[in-house]
Picture 1 (tube, helix red, strand yellow):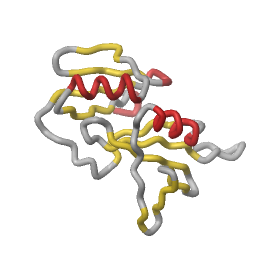
Picture 2 (picture 1 turned 90 degrees about the vertical axis):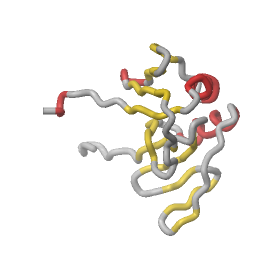
Picture 3 (picture 1 turned 180 degrees about the vertical axis):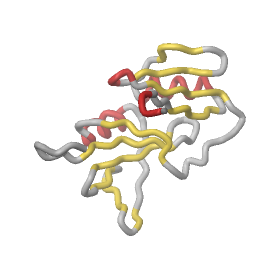
Length: 133
């Protein structure tokens, strides 16, 4: 049933103007559609996400959206230069260095948006030739 459907992330924002400015100024994304309660962004591959006005607050305790990149070190460096602060973790099985965690399957870096939504950047490990992900 849903196999052919597209999926879209929706992120809550208590201050939609502040969130719009964060995604535009810090992440370099331009909205392609907006109204009084929503701002929509489009990234590579036609993927879209929505930031919506709400009085509720995100938990900020789990990843709510991921950006898949080819060069995590370059992306983290660029985002830091734009004022994005990356989370640092030191747990059994998860330790970041300069904001980036190294793992067998991927390299990952987490940051919060202006509204407290926890987002991440993921650089997947390369899939060997002849094998599908």
